[in-house]
Image 1 (cartoon, helix red, strand yellow):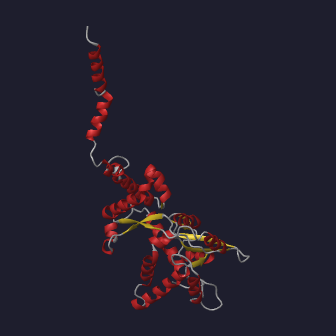
Image 2: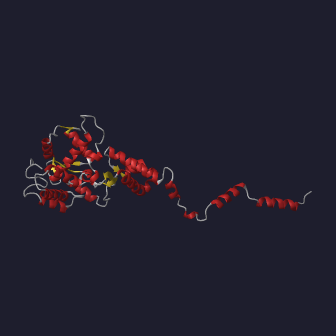
Image 3: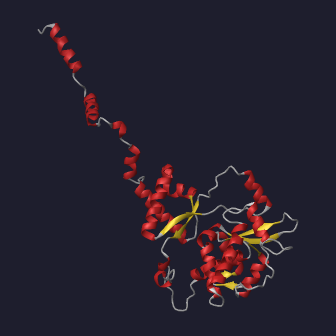
Length: 321
């Protein structure tokens, strides 16, 4: 019969032996690096998987290109919902990386649109009440960064292959909204609806255009942000005017307006005189609204007009460009 003390020693030895669970825990601890407090799990997650910077930036590139195809602005809220999902905190890193890929591969970049201009008294009061809010729009569009020598029809080509005799609706639309923006700009930054209608009538665009009726075309320009239609009844009588929209300022801007005016003048007058007229015209328009309307801008625009006339109204509505 074995002594009782021996049984106690065996029991004690069995208690000291590590259990399978303890063995697994010890093995995991041995495999863990000593400086595991320096391991950034977020960085390792960004390098691989659906939440990686690479995958998220590619998703943003695809989304930006699809938005540009349909002329839909790229809104930060939509990017968070449709591209980033639970990784919204990585917006800045993903945006920067996606913009770099757009520039290197496609020759484009995402450019932020300016905030909408406040023209009416009600709009200005609302803007003053929310003065503490963000000054940025958090809305972007794609803009080409190709050098000027590559922006040629022979290189760019049509937006799509056309059949013989088919009208290029896309190119027609570009020409129409560029013309509308130019007409508004040379009117001092704002143009009454009646005057715009008269100018479109002179272009045989008052009834139909390659995109449909005149009203439908103007509605499309408004929806896309090229122009803005403003109703104001603060003076007791309702007026309807047009100004250049945020997308029109970015996509066409000073360069687009200046190039169209130069093309229309041709060689009828000296290049120096044309440039002076263009500069004065653009300065007046920018003084009226610029990137954001100011009291100084309004005074400068009003001072540029003949005495006794409203700001933005030319001497003769039917004057040629």
